[in-house]
Length: 336
Image (cartoon, rainbow, N blue to C red; front, side, top):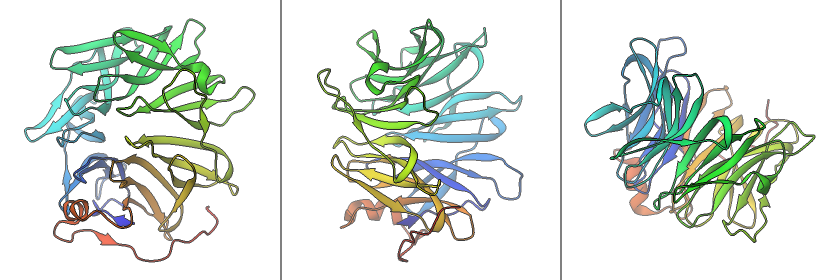
């Protein structure tokens, strides 16, 4: 496990990782109460991505060109969808409302997320060189797009005419209700890879806690329940083109640990001696980005590196040695 360079505010979280080992995420601004800033880790250095004039921002996605997506605050306090590249931060258009967020990017630079309308509702949104597109809903008032793959398929959640949140796939101009796959009273599709495989969320009927599942994208296939570590809940956030899934799963004690699922079994990625960890992104080399707590309760942005570590990836991540490699054995102590 590699601990990324710290920002100084006592909390950092890695949210996405690309094939070059660049990592996007967020951290608390040093010396300021609860001000979050979007961060980029690359070549052993950490960069504050800044904002749109306000104090806060967050970097939720990164593509293989190094473009970062998320949200940034303006001087007036609005949080706008934003992307960062070599030319700084750029705000994206909304659907008429005052805020929005980029949740996913593909390698062509298309971005997806949500944008508020002037009515106060929010809709899944697609941004590209052609402008901004409202992806609509399943008859309800709300939708969110979480991810877009390199062939332009988009996944997320959309409410229907009964105000149920349903896992949704936008593909070739069609909006497809996937809610029946994971079942239950609330469902969402969180990620899609270039093969069309997906991560789905769902709260089963009669339950209050979420279960994460994997679906191979074939209509004749059933989903695979990713399970937990003895607790009642799991969430999955990242998926690579090999079908590996990362997220967090609850332990019997009620605390959660990051996991990776390789198509057959789920592995507990452990912590830094604390009680919690979560994994958010995984690249095709198997490097996993997320966060973990230490024995003092501090939260650190981390990358779990595959063994044996890909040499080119490590060179890109470690750079000038600005990160620390934790070689301690992972504790399986009870989470808080």
